[in-house]
Image 1 (cartoon, one colour):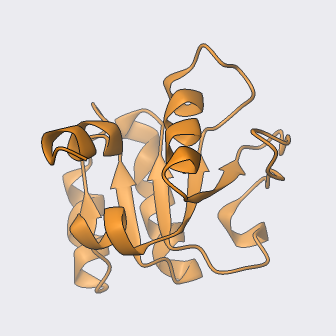
Image 2 (spheres, helix red, strand yellow):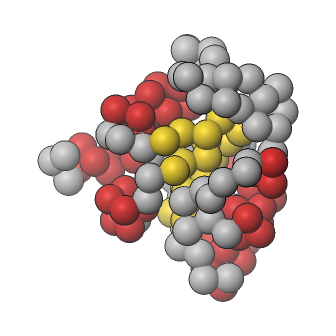
Length: 128
């Protein structure tokens, strides 16, 4: 988790849209405030917070450090697998997103993963 929060700079945010009422939007804005580059991942591939969106992780033409997943638990696992496929350095499942099988697969592939937490909470707990 520390590696992702402190060293990883490019965060693909799965489920990010321009809807400011959604948690993904506020967390993506926080990531930007913390100096992270966000990459919206959504089938609509819209621009969000000044960043070009992509329909899928595989469409992103540059390296992704962390794949941050804002999807229901039952839909989240494939994004962990795709993160491994594109060479991400970490996978982050947001609050309430839990998939133990995806967690095991991701770690077995050598990619660190956290589940059921949020960067905002983790930074706050660290006093940052």
